[in-house]
Amino acid sequence: MQPPLPSPFPTWHNAEYSAIDPTNPKHSAKGKVILITGGGAGIGQAVAHAFALAGATKIAILGRREQKLLDTKADLEAKFPGVDVYAARADVTDQAAIDAVFLKVANTFGNIDILVNNAGFQPALQPIKDAKLDDVWEAYEINVKGSIIVTKAFLRHASAKASLINFSTGVAHLPFMPGMSAYGGSKLAATKFFEYVQAENPDLQVINLAPGVIVTELQQKIIDAGIILPYDDIKLPAHFTVWAASPEAAFLKGKLIWCNWDIDELKAKKSELETTGFLTLGLRGFPEQ
Image 1 (cartoon, helix red, strand yellow):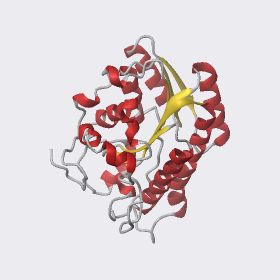
Image 2: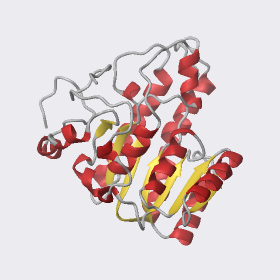
Image 3: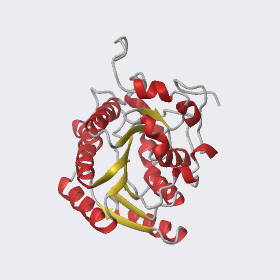
Image 4: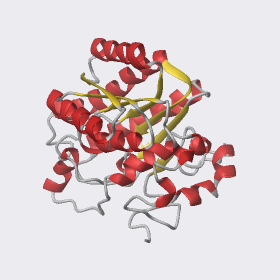
């Protein structure tokens, strides 16, 4: 379909398609240790399912709601015999808790091969003058501070040439959207942070991924505000994440991409992506570096 939002590529997907099939051997996660923050519900839960489809048998899911984590663990282990799911209640803003969980995962499963930084917070949509400071700052606490805490723990326990997929958002780089200053600003800060993570750790595969527009609890605040967007199937970001974490997507290291874009069209730009600042954050009007 034609892109309903600004896009550098002509093809737009809003559901999973064969090229990102997690059962494709090229995208195999067999033998990999996977850790997903916010893994008990929504996109995180779907990502865990996709990695199980891709052959991963060691999956750790973290979140703040213990029962949802336990329900996801039970569901995955019932659907995928042989899959071992480690579920741990941990707030990404609690450094001691996150450090302890990452150490436990590494001791139980081995070093982490793929981290999916999915936990996030969408504050109420309000103009800046009306927004409650605590609500605004919670977005920065979870989306920025939480990303830093999780990443520092990951770097201590990452395997060689591990992958890190950070869920960014189009709001971080698209034009003004009403009431989105806290969410967009915090997600933009986190996205830039992960560009630095890639630059300082060239052996890693770090990709910022906009996971589309999915009807989740987080998205409900946007729906309640009366903002209607083109919604996507939850399997699209889940399956795309498996592909983005695979060696086939290594040419996208350090880039910001959308799961709605077609991977064959991305591959056609491989040379440009590997040698220029295409699909990275920057100031419009500056010469290409």
